[in-house]
Image (tube, rainbow, N blue to C red; front, side):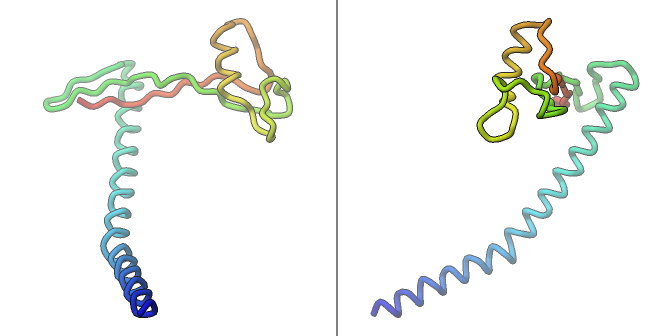
Length: 123
């Protein structure tokens, strides 16, 4: 009795995997491809806005605006970072570094710098 039930469960698992491979994976691939295209177009629009020294532009149907992302810590050289900003495993504690740099504008932490990217807002 348990062997038959176990076999039915295995059959259902095989059906689920078959459906996933035949239907979901192609959709996920199409979605990823569309996401890459959108990212490329947004990068082009941000580039055009930057070239024109504009923060925003209005089209017939859409409004585009370049918005600054929150500042992020970029680690240039982990060995130069003071120990108070390094976690137990050999990686920088970016949260602590960012807090310290934002709190004290004059502070310089060797081996890191703040970066700030732009993102596109479409309305």
